[in-house]
Amino acid sequence: MGRRPRPRAVGVDRRRPPGGPRPGPGRAAPRRRPGAAPGQDGRARPVGAVRPRPGRRRPLGRDPRRGHAGRVGAGRDHPGYRPVVRLADGAVAGVEAVLRWAHPRHPVPHEMCVELAERTGLALPLGEWLLGTVAAQVRWWRQRGIVSAPMTLALTPHQSADADLVSRVARALDATGLPAAGLSIAVPVRAVAEPEAADNLGVLAEMGVRTALSDFAFGADDLAAARRLDVDHVRVARRLVDLRATEDAPHVASLVAALAGDGVVVAVDGVATEEQEAWWRAAGADLATGPRFGPDLTAPEFLARIAP
Image 1 (tube, one colour):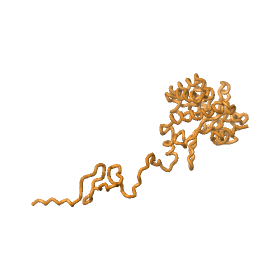
Image 2 (cartoon, helix red, strand yellow):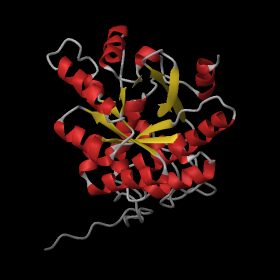
Image 3 (cartoon, helix red, strand yellow):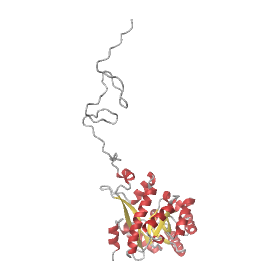
Image 4 (cartoon, helix red, strand yellow):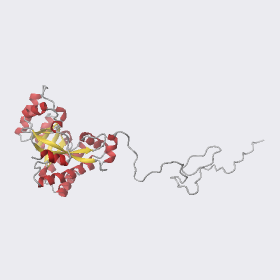
């Protein structure tokens, strides 16, 4: 004799609600309470459940560096102004545009902002925003005779090879009224091995924008690129800033003199000590940036720094 079918319990619905979990044995499917606010699946929201707030984003974690990429343009990114100092007399001879992420507990420096932008695909829009914002500020200073030297903007390899780089620069100059000669664009020397980056640099030079090679290491290829592209200046790589006690010091000093003979201005990035400043001055370098000359500044701070 076969087994008799087990009768269902009264009031138990074993059908699976749309989008919900399968009810277990002997457990009734949840039903919407009269007057209760429905959840996303049409069922009643459990008592004490947190209602999602419109416009809120899920936190990106405790590490502020992870959150930066998702917050570009959200009000915490601010342009910074890095003094470019003339080594001959220590005077501020120009300004470099940098990024400042004003996290309340863990400020993110420019170099890390740039690295994160490259890794997250935000380098192009972030670079365009920085260019437009700082160009407007520098034009205002130039109109009032506060700053006459060009503003320097150092690009990443990705930005350097951007097919729209020239149009981005042209739009920023048109929108702000900054003359082309008031802007200096620096491209990593390794990036100009790509035809797109080299072409961009050449077109910018034809527009009247000053051009430079950054991360310059005095290798044969670097020197050849500086001459081939006819750049206005080179920016010595930060990793080479402390050369005074190495066997390469005399060789580098002679190359600085050779570049100066070609009319190329030599700037040094990352100078941190008085000894480094003195060595590069003696080697014939013209300009320098770095912690030795103070931190990156806001616009009012930079104005106070250069005020007579």
